[in-house]
Length: 189
Image (tube, rainbow, N blue to C red):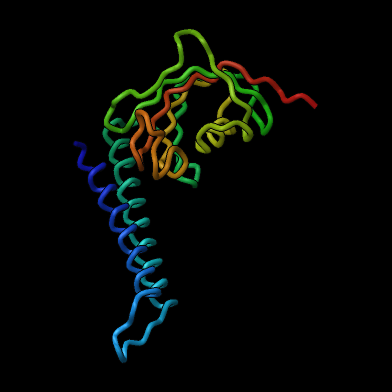
């Protein structure tokens, strides 16, 4: 079993255990002279969960930076954690909110395992900022032009997050897209 999956499973177990303990401490019998401070206990649990979230985010960011360094690709960071490397520039229209974009793609994990790809020579579409796709994909479209080919590194918080996609993408997984933005249809007024 993948060690990162085990580690994240343990983290989820520990978070659940802490929440259960919080409930028991608030609702169970208290020893004589024990001062209950529900807000203090909640504060400790919240602090611990925030620290764990920060640790996971820092680890993921370091994994992404190592991935980029190994490949030597010229990525830029959009500020949200999304990284983009345009390796073939198009000359077409830049998508805006509400436009329909048509693209071909391949989705992989940082370890190189391919998860999904569009059918050969068949572009798939979604409406920028409106359809149910990864928020990092919506964001990336606004940096591309029709005809661009690009690599997108989408961190888990902009991709499938804590749960993954329950099929091929595990929890807390960074995904790497190789996309070709084939067409941009302006939104209809």
